[in-house]
Image (cartoon, rainbow, N blue to C red; front, side, top):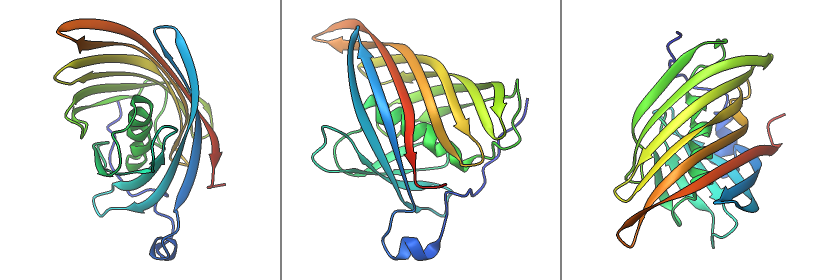
Length: 206
């Protein structure tokens, strides 16, 4: 088992771009969501607008139903704190957590390596997340199996899935997540089957 350590990554591009108010990085993802068999498609657009001294990032996220982009600060552990805008969708929350893996040194990972994290998510939930590298399909590419359990006061979520990650470009390429969401609805706990598929469409970094 390899221990993951945190480093500053190539997400920190140029100070001049940040000073000019430009996006440090622009990424777009296609999203397919199924809830209890009902499917919908959307797109998530992330702008990396800054980094923090604690190896975190500041993102601006455009969601289809939001009146304005959401501004969120994500620390090196993936804890997201909203700076502006509406709460993030479940798709955006998971993508932001995987995007924050850029604060970790993953370039030396190989098949069988495992690691995990526990703690707050920033929106009142607690998480327990585990990763295991299944294979390395290409140079810098990691095929990772993951589980993620989330607990809010009135909701429990249990995800499992696969994440394709580029350790050199420090960005999620794609992920699939399936799980059960048990939400308290009018005093009764109701289970919902949720499936998410997210795929990178565009990355401003060549």
